[in-house]
Image: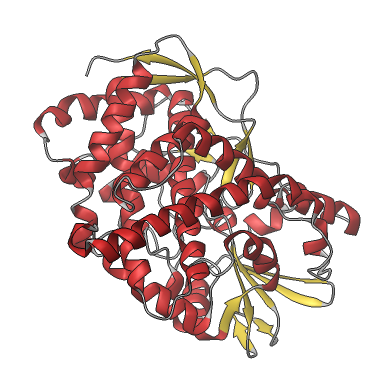
Length: 462
């Protein structure tokens, strides 16, 4: 644990909004209702205090692992023994089908191999200028509305969609951004929720009423993607040299992937891929609005250094305070709040036996707020992630993009995008929270602010 008591601001750090852990275990019906409404509300105090816990649910042993050494043991060194947990698949499969996030076995290997060139370091670095141009234009438009209150959560969906379609799809996605953003809000709100029938392991043919409202949004995305893919196929057939070497082209060239599997992966990146960065940016700007002394550190850094950094590729390393604010926001509100697996064969985790078929849960929501791992775990303290402090953190106590063989393939893309977008937004504008009450985090596919993030904009010179 890193002690941040020395060298920090004398001002009290901001305690980030979060559900209060339960002192006593939830009863059966209360658990089902709470888990279907907001899974991060099910946890009790022990989950934030103990390295390993075991509970049985519907006669299935469930092991919660918070200890970094044991996380490495299970999800890295012995990763082959742990497959996707059935409950996780029941929630995500209807949305993403056979996309990279839910595929397993040979299909996952083929898909991952096909996408790897897109996210190679050289290619990601080559996208920095496009990311900066889109972010700067967006930031200037927002800052041009001083005094207005906007839902920043919605606005970040628009920004990250613009960056995604420009970088990974070469501005070749059909559909209007505003229509996309509205559909994405509905899609993520309803399709990513845990239904009580999922928790009770009910047969898949029983309709999940909680997800019915998201079906029209899902159809919209499927149609948009099908039209985009067909247009690119025609271009590749008629004039191959003109087709950009982006994610869409590489997927269409991939042998062994059916048209439906290609669509599944495109919707995975449009949905889960852009959504994580959008949520990270929104939470970062909210947290900085509640910690003015931390915001001032970032603004001073940007004002002093950005004019001398014309190449946005340099921003990642040259703006440590900006990057630290983003990373601390992803600690408090992790883009992927749960990494759920099932044991194929019996194993032993610490002092606990893990029977074959048991659920193994590594929850960044718990690990990132664990009392044994972090100093003042519920507080917003970006200095934890400055280079001199970051080196003291265990590799497996901070998991914003997962860990092991299934670590997010776009992690470096997302971090580069996040730092560039945050720097551009804060260079041109200041965002102050305008809600009547603190935002309440809700777990869907990502951790979202219930009701959005109403923020008042003011312009900064920059």
